[in-house]
Image 1 (cartoon, rainbow, N blue to C red):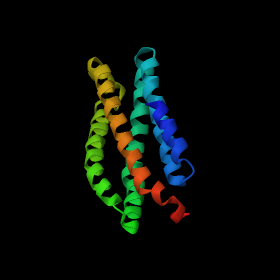
Image 2 (cartoon, rainbow, N blue to C red):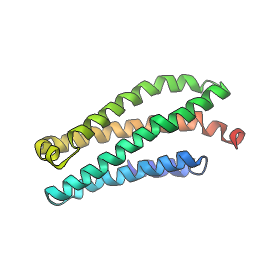
Image 3 (tube, rainbow, N blue to C red):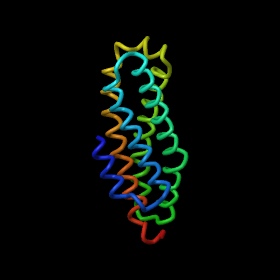
Length: 154
């Protein structure tokens, strides 16, 4: 998953400052995701989880309130079929956003972590799978709705 993130950044890095920042934020969230598995003790685990949750919520918020808006605007401006892809993928991405928000609510504080510790491994695994799917869809949107037009935009 982390390698795919680096590949996306290499492929699309530099095309747009906002997308670059967003992909860097994605990578930081993934680093935090993997750090959870190395945590020693409840306090460290809780700290890593809270950091990860904050980064992930910031990342998905940035996507919804900045990135997707820009990508959809480009799709409409160029009217070359990209809007259909956006209409197909966006509802799925919204679904995954709700999963992220639910995970955040479940592990938002040390008390929540302690209450839900028994399901953490399963929740992290399920979230990791959905994050991978979401990142793939986002990469498709960037490729189809932005990169295809980057020479015209520049």
